Amino acid sequence: MFVIIGYVLVFASVIGGFLMAGGHVAALIQPAELVIIGGAAVGAFVVSNSPKTIKAVFRGMPGIFKGSKFTKQLYIDLLSMLYDMLSKCRKEGLMSIETDIDAPNDSKLFAKHPTILADHHAMEFVCDYMRLLVGGSMNAMQVENLMDIEIETHHHEAEQVPHAIARLADGLPAFGIVAADGGGSYNGVGWAAAGRTWEAYRCRPGGNLHRHPSVLWVGITNSGLADPQGRRVHKNASMHQSGVAGKHA
Image (cartoon, rainbow, N blue to C red):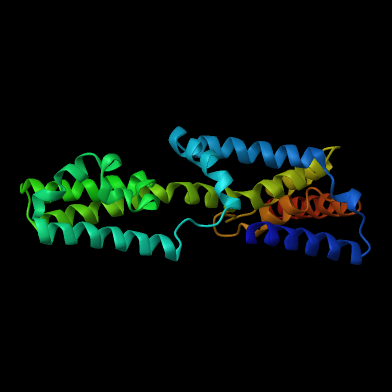
């Protein structure tokens, strides 16, 4: 619910401020730029992630609009189940829960906690490690170390989806720049201006893009602007190139 409220506030603020400044909503509808940004974003997302992560992202998308399942009541139910299980071990012995952990869906012990029983990840985790203790093949310290490793691995796998979305979000501003430059330069004037700026800087003695990227940045960010800005970039780039050529002559 709060996610939907947040999106509504974002769109209302942006569009409302745009209208207050005298803008027209129709100017925001740019299908070509949406195709560039959306297509490039989806393509980069597919290239940079494994099929398993991509499927997990689409499976998890409906959960964005739902609340977290990790509520206070869930933790209370989990603690109650552990208390009942350990109390049975203390009263009847460790072997008394062997049938419960071998068939948890048929266990009367776990049937009293349907919320936890429905979470197969939690049940597998509890039953697997209680089975090791019941079997007596490992001591408590070794089991604890295994539990820590499995929890860390589970967290790492669970973070793949949000990290993939975060990387995609980090790249969207760059795709927006490409769309603004390419989509706004239908006659090629903008890209030519960027190219001339790059050529002028490349011919400069000691020019190094890694040390001074701002020159190319200025050329690219101005490449999508209409005249007279486009002509101004052309003129500045030509003058710069002429000056460089005269200096070398």
